[in-house]
Image (cartoon, rainbow, N blue to C red; front, side, top):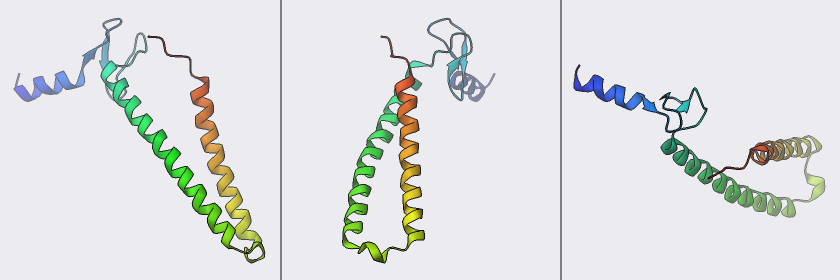
Length: 112
């Protein structure tokens, strides 16, 4: 067997630390016990934390920007169609954040 084949097999097959079953990409989850490989879980936690922090920062900045723009516009100058479109877009964004919040709140507590 060539070195390239051996390297590719090493990179695409791991063992579950809990039950010893083969763990394969793309999700690196054990088919027997459902646990994820620890290195993948750590990386995903870091990525998700970065995404949540970016959302928090960008949402705050966008809200301040939108609020200051609305303050400088006379209410009568905003067409009703545009006002409706803006309200729909803001409500959709709020619902999307609420769905993620519900999913996070519904997850069981991690045990360590």
